[in-house]
Amino acid sequence: MSGVELRSASLKFGDRTLWSDLDLTVAPGEFVAVLGPNGSGKTSLLKVLLGQNQLTSGTATLGGKPGYIPQQKAIDEGVPLRGRDFVGLGWDGHRWGIGFRERKNRRAAVDLAIDSVGASAFADDPLGRMSGGEQQRLRVAQALVGDPDVLLCDEPLLSLDLANQQVVAHLIDRRRRTHSTSVVFVTHEINPILPVVDRIVYLVDGKFRIGTTDEVMTSAVLSELYNTDVEVLRVRGRLVVIGTGDAMDALGSSHHAGTE
Ligand SMILES: Nc1ncnc2c1ncn2[C@@H]1O[C@H](COP(=O)(O)OP(=O)(O)OP(=O)(O)O)[C@@H](O)[C@H]1O
Figure 1 (cartoon, rainbow, N blue to C red):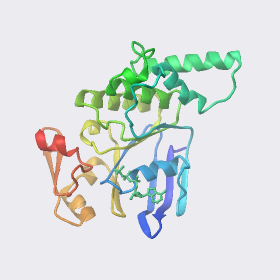
Figure 2 (cartoon, rainbow, N blue to C red):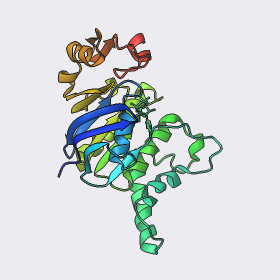
Figure 3 (cartoon, helix red, strand yellow):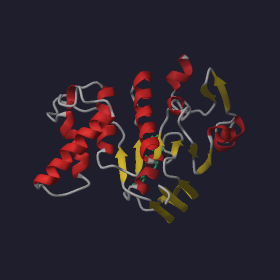
């Protein structure tokens, strides 16, 4: 069974169509990135898969349990939650019961998830005092603790430095390889995931294109989607895109594209 299946899916808010007639099947273990400018409907797509948004027409099916990495919000320094307890919230969302066995299962699952993201050394610290990269590892652990079949990630690389972007991308890539977890990964930062992404869904103003990186990330395809001249350059293994008109577009954030 596939991880995600969208059939003739359309989503409208009022008279605005975010996308329509979207057909997408994400295989077990497949890594699909969702790109597009601000407001193109990337988060809304994840919310459809989570059952938080209703499609206007068509169907959306998840082939198993979802794990969700929500868009990053800075965690207040005053938050007294320890990293370990934060990860445990991912488990509590999936199961109920407070019996001895359940508590034991929970502890084992939390330990495993923390270990899998390399966070054992700091998991007992208060979350609010951790660095952005440490917090983000624990967000990944929280999404993994329920042993998901489909990992839905909303900009998990946002505001991380390059080294931490690579760490987080690698953790998610490893998970899908070891557990055949399907990954749907919303991002502005294509470059850190270029080595791992299987296919791209590129949304622009009601239009979309689905394919491999080589099929989608071309001057011709993006010019058609954006309805203007867009140039895609490959520079030292990175993609640099010129002309989309977005301050921070879906093609490697502007600060990276501009400075490297
Ligand atoms: N429940 C809703 N009702 C009405 N409009 C909505 C609703 N949810 C989202 N929208 C609108 O739909 C559009 C797409 O929102 P969405 O959050 O999916 O965009 P996005 O591609 O994730 O953007 P960003 O890159 O800025 O996060 C936005 O214009 C948003 O205001």
